[in-house]
Image (cartoon, rainbow, N blue to C red; front, side, top):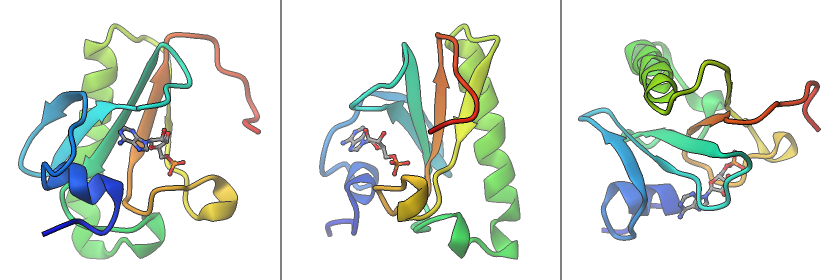
Length: 113
Ligand code: AMP
């Protein structure tokens, strides 16, 4: 059955992705429109539309996603990187399945646009 979002379809293996990591809780793959030399997305297998919708029962999952993010960033050779979670349209969220961006490999400006 088709997932609700493009990331749901990736989880269901209905569309391909450039996968870099997978376990029973999450999948990580390269962003199709990279904004830096390293641009990877980590998504939970659980359907959560955004950080707005997380609950106490997601505490371990959220911690796991951050640990995976750090591990992937290091395995990509990054010492410095940015982890981003856009929440809501006005904050730049375009895919409504929770995801963490790992962005690195170049100097990153602050504040973001
Ligand atoms: P956001 O704007 O925070 O919702 O991020 C969504 C990200 O998903 C964007 O950086 C897109 O380039 C990326 N994206 C959309 N479709 C795909 C896809 N099929 N495979 C990999 N990345 C994608």
